[in-house]
Image 1 (cartoon, helix red, strand yellow):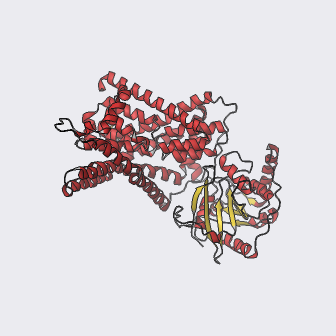
Image 2 (tube, rainbow, N blue to C red):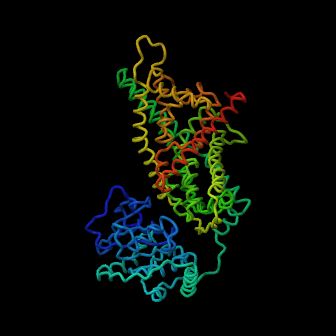
Image 3 (tube, rainbow, N blue to C red):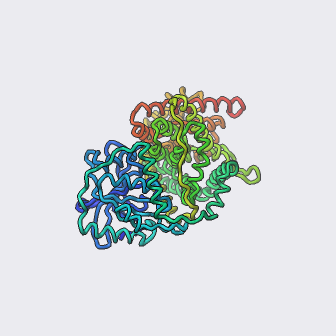
Length: 635
């Protein structure tokens, strides 16, 4: 059996086509542990892609039973019902009913239920039985259920449902033994033919009847313990308090940004020293000329100026991963639901927007969980305003150059306060734009309340945290080695050619294509206080926001200036720096994000809506910031 500790490498290992004679589909509600079960069953034999025609993720792997039998496992998107109220649920419904061209109907269903909360899962199982496929019901997280004192008579439940019911714990070694004891004989004997489907889309009346039947099954076969006064309940009385709860949430976020600046500084200094040594080494080894300039100014200075911010990005993710593993994120969703509802956002938008702190792309894709199309569109359009990790290099560079590294208010970092303010500005802009969109879309129905199970608090698993940090570091470094590398090559070439004419008295870069392009664009950006060097950096920065930092490093390195932070502090005014920060709060400088908006919204129209409104807000915010700051003497 493949253990749950195996690290999947979905892009490296493809399923064996010869092993796909039998395909089992994992079906269950979101957050029932389905993905953990899939990882435990398939280990490192996974392949990840998208279903044809949609951007819903498709995961397939090969499971091997203890006796050596192999079968294909497909992890279907989470669903509460085959009635299908979102793109994810539509894919699951169409696969099970054989309505997706080119997609085979599974040979059997492995229905996954959260053993601590069986009502919704039992209602879904009764609906799945009408599809006509063999079903095995897996009571996942049975260890947690037993720890809470729940007693589930899975044998009696199996007899009443007429299907195998198996307790399991996907995240523990040996937690799937009971599953293999049932699946192995089924595979050996051969699965029965699929019966004709009798499924029809249930009405609201049908759903109420189904829920009453699920409630009856739970009452008959599950012994509920008296509600205990658990540690989680005691903590929730404080963190979910209507007054103390939001203050604690703000305090956690505030602490995060203070720590990010303080803890990351030694690591950033070390990376800076390494790239400074590399630049000096290139200057010593390579003769002066174009090759030395390309290596030292284009590659080392450009990429080094971005990689130096890796520690801050990792510390930010460390806090997010710790809070997720601890179980606090679901509480944060409840705390923010009322605020978001008043701004016109669906309560379910909190998780997509929270994901956008890492990157807007998974945040936009996570909006599929929102049933109402107009609410989903609103979430997609505002998600890029959340402060993603790609903005951190830009923010940190400007803060380090213009905000003193001093302690205020009894020991708080002023730089950390400014970073916290930038994140808060992103959240505030999301609420304002969503409030406006509320009237533009003219919703005819009220937002549904947020329904979310609160998991017990638990100690974070070090292995999960380490794996999450490794994956994010790998993604960041891959971008530095691909997108940023080639952007630096282009910027260096534009900044170097054509060479200055004979007798030139100005710096060589002033005669380059980069200077020509920057000076052509500069009049448009002049009211914002931006110079032509900023204009040069913003254009390739459309590929990825952090490229702007590398672009500035390359332009000023070719100019023969010193360290980037000291150079900016000496050449820019405070008003210009503040205006650039305001620009990056709103500007849609990420082509990948725009492409995902187009796919998820189903039309290029909404992508252009995002481009226009975000650039308009960026220009207006930067203009107002620069003009006000200049009027106050910071220009």
